Amino acid sequence: MEGGKIGRLDIPFKCLPSFHLHKVINMHTSEFRPLDVERIRKDFPIFATEPPLAFLDNAASTQTARPVVDAMDAYYDTYRSNIHRGIYRISEQATEAYEHAREKVAQLINAPRTRQIIFTRNTTESINLVAHSWGNANIREGDEIVLTVMEHHSNLVPWQLLAQRTGAVLRFLEITDEGLLDFTQFRDLLTEKTKLVAMGHVSNVLGTINPIQSVIEAAHAVGAKVVVDAAQSVPHFHVDVQQLDCDFLAFSGHKMCGPTGIGVLYGQLELLEEMPPFLGGGSMIRAVERDVSTYAELPAKFEAGTPSIAEAIGLGHAVDYLTQTNLAAIHVHEQELLKYAHQCLKEIEGITLYGPSAPHQKAGVISFNIEGVHPHDVAGILDTHGVAIRAGHHCAQPLMKRLDVIATVRASFYLYNTVEDVDRLSEGLCRAQKLMTRRK
Picture 1 (cartoon, rainbow, N blue to C red):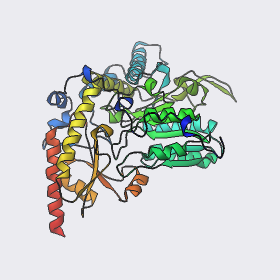
Picture 2: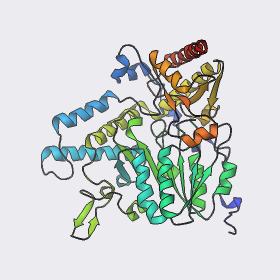
Picture 3: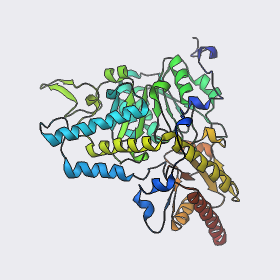
Picture 4: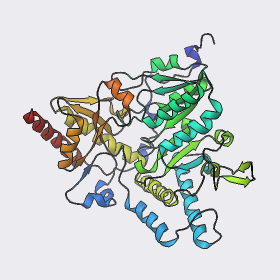
């Protein structure tokens, strides 16, 4: 390979740039019934409050299901204790509940082994773990890390810091005007210098569903590892790490009806075994001498100190809740809301929508701006009408610059949202537009 170029025929782009949906989402469409949203909403006490709330900021953090809270309360009320150490009944009960949660997460994403599931605080910590532990050991000066312009800061800043530590080079995959990744450019970005590709499965701003399996195949063809930020995908549709063949995958509990303070890192077994610890302390050791230590087996090697026990237990019950509800049904429900929202918002004069227009290329996230109205003003006015949305740069400032805006308004949907929520959003936007126009 001369001049850092690879012949295009050497890279398996058999489904790029036009990709097949089944390579992105395993829908299992024959295995679900439509959601009973009215029943689901009863599991979330916040929707019984007055005035009624249309919660449309699910890409930031979802509401927590009552069974999740009940499970955490049961831990605190009846068997509160530390894990893996106590030789007494409630400690063993807590250990069993904690490790059972790990088993549930492994089953959710079809991890081959439970010990490939590492509990962290959130997606951000999971990615930082990879950047420090794998990155420091494997990235050298001149190596290239390929990112996209649509990345959340949590999948950008850790790689910037790694590049600063090592002398590696960051390269960026741009997007088309439609909000899709420019895969003609991706062919040229991948070279023998590429050691890592880090990419979000779903954009938290545009909702773009990236054909991550094809990305992984192409990256592996040049010997690069792949980190998948799955914070916006695992909560919304079925993700199979064995089918994807990703090297690392990260997501958070608070975006999937679970508690804050708990996240997940999945990694290929041989990579995790080779990686040095991220944090040192109790629990992650096998033996400690005065000047040297040996480390515990996976997953303990990466779970130093007392972990988030109640939160892990809560995450396990959140997995139960989503599994019983059915992720395929959740995805279809979100798609229906997304299509309806697109129809409603397009009727509002002066509105600009960002991201793909084709539903099969987009998750339940819709970002937009109204001409002449600042996104923060839109959010404030909607709040007075009981509609909670997000306004700002959404921790994606490079993407804002690509869109040539300082911020956007973002509405994001989940299993408990309704058509009425979308109607209230649309009505509130019309009011905001009229109010701000009169003030001018």
